[in-house]
Image (cartoon, rainbow, N blue to C red):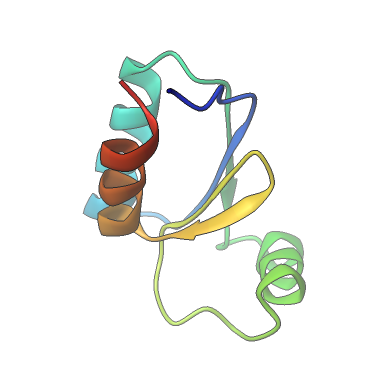
Length: 83
């Protein structure tokens, strides 16, 4: 059974190939997505608060409010939860 994806948040930064690829995957699935660049301090602060630590890498992806992880974890999540 597939999980209904209501919202995807992707925290990214400029010139990040994995960020771009993750956004492409989400867009192709037509899932609602909000991108937040950690190049902006407010978004970095928000992500740090959500994770409980400063992120070591991007993208950091949340699906329906749950932290999934980076691009590879997104691919794994889709394999387990989506058609």
